[in-house]
Amino acid sequence: MGILENIKEVEKKIENAAKSAGRKRDEITLIGVSKTKPVSLIKEAVGCGIRVLGENRVQEIMEKFDHIEGAVWHLIGHLQKNKVKYIIDKVDLIHSVDSLELAKEIDKQAKKFDKVQKILIQVNISGEESKFGLPKEEVLPLLNEVKSLENVKVKGLMTMAPLGAGEDELHEIFGGLKKLSIDIKEKKVDNIDMEELSMGMSGDFEIAILEGATMVRVGTGIFGHRE
Ligand SMILES: *Cc1c(COP(=O)(O)O)cnc(C)c1O
Image 1 (cartoon, rainbow, N blue to C red):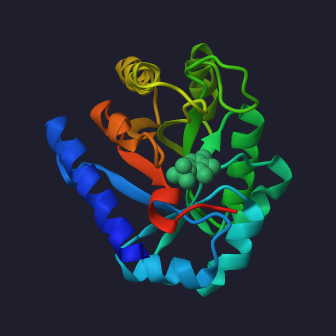
Image 2: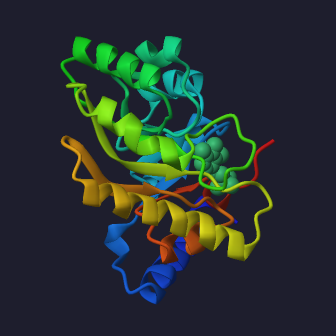
């Protein structure tokens, strides 16, 4: 299948999942995850209506950035502190903030561009052994520190389900992130928004939408399998 057919298929599934959840299609942003894919293919996707591109490596955003028009970039993968400076002027949203040190570095670099950098806090809901993402108990304490950074704006939360999770577990994880965002919203922390929930990938975005995702990160489903 070509990219256009793939996107139509993903769009249909998003619409159906939104409808089942009693939600509107336009509450959900489709992020085309273009990691490892060449500029030519990414241009084709943008030509087919993809407006947000997700990459998980700083290097790839730097290489592709100048070649793509008509879309914004999101960093969705782990970000090392020493690499923030390379992408701070290129990304619309960073999905993967899981420490105060990283948030502070983003704040510092964003200041140089007079920019308020939008970020999400990455949460490890399932509690599985994972290098990335904050345990849910640590999210509110982090937000209470991050709220005072002037050049960082928290827009919500992000999570990744563990590989091979079954349907029940996926509902539990995505539902858990939604619940956490509601709990945090009730705390009314200054300067912190909880409007975005980035959850769901090619294999599980429909379940994520049923549980309240506002951003789904779809790679394989749009661009085909990766090497
Ligand atoms: C690669 C990646 C995706 C997309 O994965 P697919 O299964 O190809 O849709 C989503 N989120 C993150 C953080 C990724 O690294």
